[in-house]
Each structure stands twice: as C-alpha cells, then as structure tokens.
Image 1 (cartoon, rainbow, N blue to C red):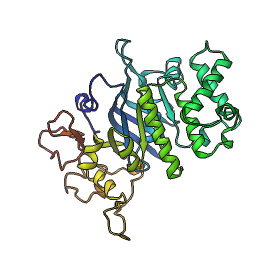
Image 2: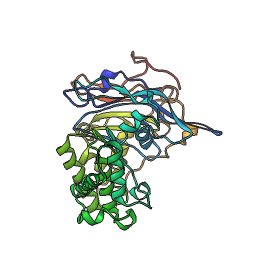
Image 3: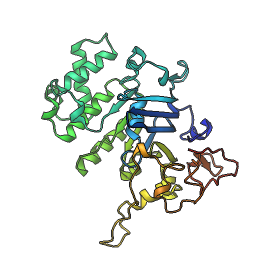
Length: 361
C-alpha cells in the first residue's frame, strides 16, 4: 500500500483549503476469480478554480476513481478503505466524508449533480434514448430544486443549452440524443452536468471519438465555463495533449495508484517517474525526424488479477533496481523542498532504506 501524508498532497494550488481531498482510496471488485484492486491507495486534492488532470493508460483506474467519488461504483465493486472529503464553502460547515454516506441516501443524491457533476465518456449511452435531452435536463434541475416549476425549469434548460453553444436551443431542447451530432451531444451532456451549478465537474474522456476541431471547441468551452463559474475540474484522459492544454496539476496513475503528481509545466519539463517519461516519449513531436517510429512502452498493463509484486511498473521499467523494485512498494513522496514539490513513487528518487517507510506487497 502506498502511503502519503496529507500535507504533501495538499500543496497543489494555493490559498484556501481544497474543495475535495481523497486519501488512501481503495476500490476493489470481488469475483469468483479473485479480487481486482482497481483503485489501490489513491491520494490527491482538487482546488476550486483549478483543473486536476488524471492521466494514464486504459485500465489504470481513472474512471473507477471518478465513480468512487460519486459513489456510483457498479457491483461487485465497493470502496474498502479511504476517505473522500468534500469541503463546503468557507464558513458553511464541516467537510463531509462521502465514503461514510449511503450510496442511495438523500445526502449523496443531493451531492450528485448538485455539488459534483460528471460528464460521461460516451454521451450517447448516457442519455436516455426514450426521453428528450430537454426533459432530462429539466428533471435534473427539479430534482435539486423542487420549488421550481416545470415551465421555469424548461427555460433554464434552454438557457443551459445556449450557454454551451448549441444553436437553436429552443428547438433542440425537444430533440432526442440520437438526433444530435457527436459534438452537440457532448455539449448537451455538459449542459446537463452544469444545470445545478456544481462546484466540481468531473470530465471523463470528454473529447473521445470527436474530430480535432470539435475537440478543441469542447476544451475551450470547459475553460470558458470554469473561468465564469470558478468551478474545479477533474479531467480524466489518456491524451497528454489535452492535459497540456487544460490542466493546472497532473496525477499520473498506473495500475490503480498515483505514481507522480506535479504542476503541469513541471511534469512536462522534468518528468520524474519512469512511467511518466515513457508516456511523454510516446507523444508525436515536430522535432522527431520524418518517418521515425514513435517510442513505445514495452509490454502491457498487467491484468488486475495478476498484479506484480513490489512496484507495479517494475516489469516494464527500463531502470528497475534488481532486488528492490520487485519486492517493495515505493511511497509517494516529495522531491525537493520548494513550496510545491513534485511527488513521485520511485526508488530512483527515494532509495529504499533511507528513512522512507515502505512495506512489501
């Protein structure tokens, strides 16, 4: 298990306390074949007005982390350990640990869509095929504000569609999701997520399957809405180009764990973990000679039922330390002593036995 003290994580951002703090989050799936550690000791903070990028290959636990925050993990999965504290606005009460709330209880339902909203990876499968887009936005608005009439909620839905740049919103509000293009569906999904003014927007691969032009429009839309509303964004993607464009801070995940956490500029300028370096080497570059093959990461992400011992990345790591990396799990610890040091989980930077607390897998 990777451990990290709260003070080390909370250094992202500046000023007031974070909006969301995740500590030692473990979400496991239980089956007849064994236990899948989909999320296994994740720690990070999300600050108001800032964007935290969560990046990693498919199967690294990014989406399960998002679903854990909203308490919508599918069975047979469940949160087995950790805390997810949602902090109220200053002077408005104490933080609430979402892990301690009932998944289907009134408190959690009020938070879902109210304080925290999710933009799903594929809006076509997220919208109901038998209800209009407008009806689904109206239902969401009235669920969180029961005093609002249906007519006022409809006006609000049209306003939201206009805000996200959907043309002829008065007509589109009565259309079904299948009648919209991919870009318009994604905009409608963002309108649905923002209908109740959430303080945190979780965007799970919001530009997947969109053409480059539409992708750029969606990203600009998210940045504009964040600037207008001051909301936090947790952006989940495997696209490092999107991370460079959008994120203020980045958490790199591998096999259910955060292996590096740093401000975005520092991460791209000086990546510290071998996995982060390998990811960055695989990005196409204008400085690479024509027709030169892109660098790849040897091997694949191990199946969660066959997790390697020790550091989860060591079977694919070119600089693994024999006798250490395969038998011990490195802590996620700061590098340097500045006000916002990067955090990295690697024995290259924190040698085993130099005072860092470690444990075998």
